[in-house]
Figure 1 (cartoon, rainbow, N blue to C red):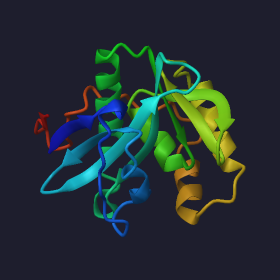
Figure 2: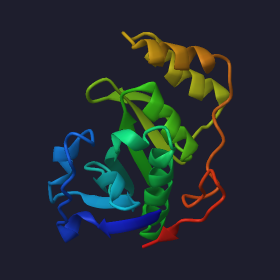
Figure 3: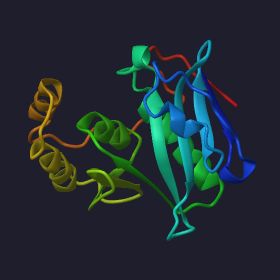
Length: 185
């Protein structure tokens, strides 16, 4: 696995992803966002980001997508952690992301994000780093998802998280379940 920062928003980078393999593929062609990817014989995960429109000290992750055959491998969490680390190197004080499902919520929590207490956009919960990672705050976000019309998989997932603490934060973006270390670009 290779983690690569393709560029910041001002670099005008385009990324073409297969729309049959990646959700939000069309959003990555736009040149107004920075891009980061995980590659493993081709792109397996991608993120798009830019500075928050109202707070130049906050980097906003606009989209994260993982190739359909690699979902569940925690690549989204690891890529978010990678982007978060690159943002702090560039002196951003905060990083935010809006998520619209409990699986993305959990992935962002694994990357060190936490529920801000706010909702925005198209039924998105706002997650931030750094912030309050208390169990109460974590469960408050999950409770908002529980109020929605959910798939059986989402209902089962949320039931398994009732009264639990937030997941542990990844030690680093390059950690892999097998214990191998990823290369960075």
